Picture (cartoon, rainbow, N blue to C red):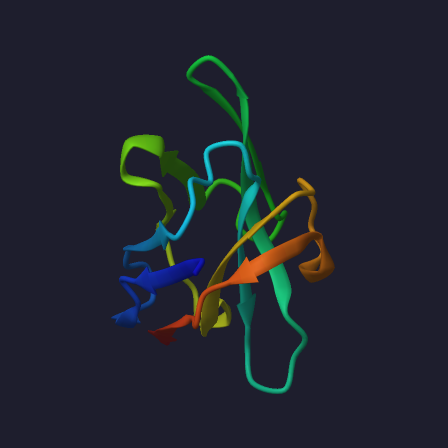
Length: 125
């Protein structure tokens, strides 16, 4: 059974940092694109970042314009995990953050087949 479990969310103030983790189990995701999405109340699920194996020890990484320069996606194949380092957090970053794995290195939720349960990030202004 494939499972993705996020952790690391919380309540922080504007300008603070958080590091989200996503632990995968049930299969190895080294060849799978992995993504982070977020969903704020009343809004659609939004792409945040994605990473995909490029070859050797290199990975592609892509970030949404809204988080570029502040958030960084990374992965650790030995731990079968993916991370999202979030710096300079803003109130508008408040959302539930989801980890996802799929066969398409894309920015749409439909590109991903497996999803975690989400972790809440709240940034107070």
